Image 1 (cartoon, rainbow, N blue to C red):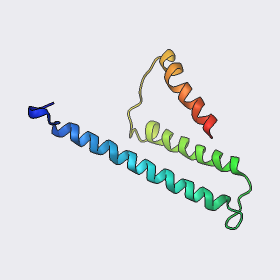
Image 2: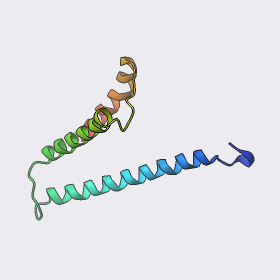
Image 3: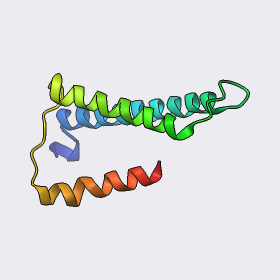
Length: 100
């Protein structure tokens, strides 16, 4: 903290950027939910396969993540040990897949 307990300019910028990302994420999640409602509604598009819709969504997200990380190098890859991966990433993935 700087003088008088105020935050530095860099910290404020990071906070604003983080909240902007969260707001974009919430908005995009909302639009996906509404779009899925339209697709699954019997009066609208009437897609009879909700599990396949989830699989299409997950395939798109996985492909996009692969392209951003491995092909375009938009995000730096993170190196972590097998133990860290099993304790940190696998439980989150398992709980996320259960929520689907």
